Length: 163
Image (cartoon, rainbow, N blue to C red; front, side):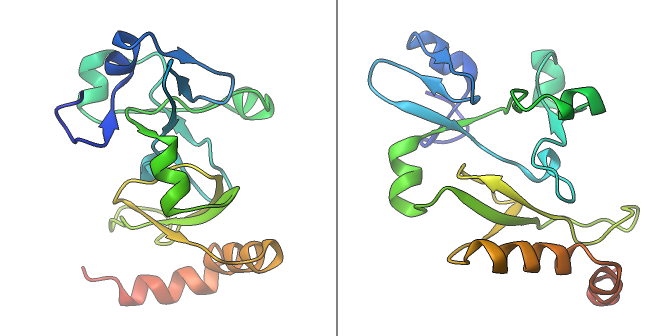
């Protein structure tokens, strides 16, 4: 089990349980399926596959470095993100049922181009750096996502962000 938490597992932990990565980025073991954990650095505006931890050394991953997915990788619908941690799918389904979520970053720095970054992700667990908006129908989620990513919304959010 991972030292970081009793809930989250690393790829190394799950390989020791003979886990196999499926085409959706989940890891399947004999007893359960583990879902990839989304972190704020993995998303951007309207993009649930902004960066990945794929092809990084263990040291780079520990230092929380990630690689931006190139445009040709985004064009490939079968390209999925590779995360640092996975969560048991039964825990996720019990707490947050659904097929997708509207999420936004909880982290904003003065050097960031945008203050508010929101997108819609598949039903996957989220770390503390992402906030989840649930119980919206699809049309309202799309509308709210577009409002949150608009320049006027971003301007007002920037005014309310402490320096």
